[in-house]
Length: 159
Image (tube, rainbow, N blue to C red; front, side, top):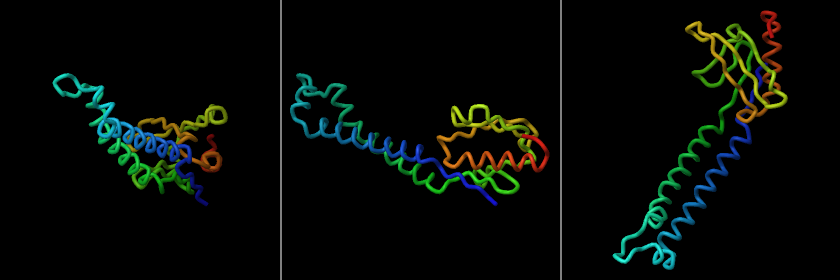
């Protein structure tokens, strides 16, 4: 039986908030930089050259809209991503899997208070690696951790 932990609502909502803030700032800067004549008159010198504030208000919206588009693309890329604890391994993606027999220990000291646990496992080069898995990144992480502990106890008597 595989247990899934989808990307957390915390992370998705945070990205949505960043997108809205970028778009709101782009609209505000764009209004002041292009449409607000009083603002434009205030930030132009005697020669008619814009000062640094007006330049930021005219060029900033392009970068903010670009940032919002990139964040939106990242949000779309994350929408179906999930952590899967199946019978033999912990699957982060098609390319990133941790076999249960390579896990050395699970440090769940801070799971209840801070919402994360640390897996220590040996990678393909036989080098020990620590991986921090956080509730801010995945929902349903408690069930995954319980399944992981059960699988490790059943397979080799470790926890």
